[in-house]
Length: 368
Ligand code: NAD
Ligand code: GLY
Image (cartoon, rainbow, N blue to C red; front, side):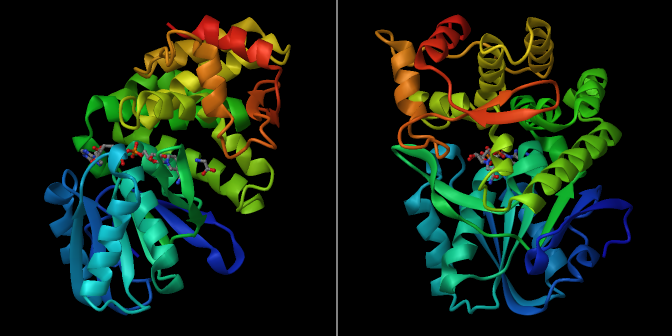
């Protein structure tokens, strides 16, 4: 374990349990990885943006632990989260004769993490992997909980596996190089935890939003730790999303429609989720579950985080129709019926269907 000060969140999943480390100067310290089983080979998977900044430092930290430390740079971007890019990981593993004890290290944001995790789930039917998330979004959400996968042209994250990492290393220092837009995108997934599970955390975020936007280390440490605790609490009860875990998709049903409708990468995932939360809150209000003050409170926070609150027009002819068409592809849909994560009281979420007519009104009211 690292000698640097850090906090640990445990995720309890029987033999798939693991730790999430949160702190500064962690990812490039050999001590961070000392508890992992020894293996002959490590493959650091990163991308063309993150690798030049951080890959060599991670490789150096791993050298005492593995006989060979290989690295691979994937193209950067949501638009590359597909089969062809995934195959580059299998190419590298096979070309280097990597065996079943090879450990994959995902060094990057959610795109690298989701693809590396899926490669680890399927290479030789499963090899270990470690998440070293380098975006705020990945630290508070995507690196934790074992959802891995890729996009399909017809739907986001439609091909993948539940596969847990052995360790998650959230180094707050690497967030300093994030562009402001990516910080805002990550804050969407931080804010998400408030309305669905912890109103006290929502109030804390409201009071500290400027510190978070400015990447204040103490504020980030609390936000990342609390987000991971809340995610661990949910995933610990429902690893494979047979029920409760769906609440983590608050804002995602509208958000995924925005991402797919505009083309992946046009809006950042966190931007789409931020706007999607406003739309889901407005739908909750129109169904009589929360009041207008709650929707406005959430909207103010999303604006303060630097995120959009007006959805894009996806079809000039029938915009609500296009949203509905895309949302029917959502993984939560049941026999073509869209199931939304709604807020049915501050700090409480429910997953249920809504009449198309009301959803259409929400889309008309919330899109520019
Ligand atoms: P991303 O992985 O595309 O990263 C955003 C951008 O920041 C990229 O250009 C990346 O190269 C760059 N970057 C990463 N770290 C950096 C750093 N430290 N300094 C400078 N630049 C850096 O996007 P993301 O927001 O991290 O993740 C979004 C993805 O995560 C989506 O594909 C989404 O579906 C997925 N996701 C998965 C889960 C899950 O549970 N598995 C949850 C939420 C989101
Ligand atoms: N990001 C949603 C989930 O992990 O379930």
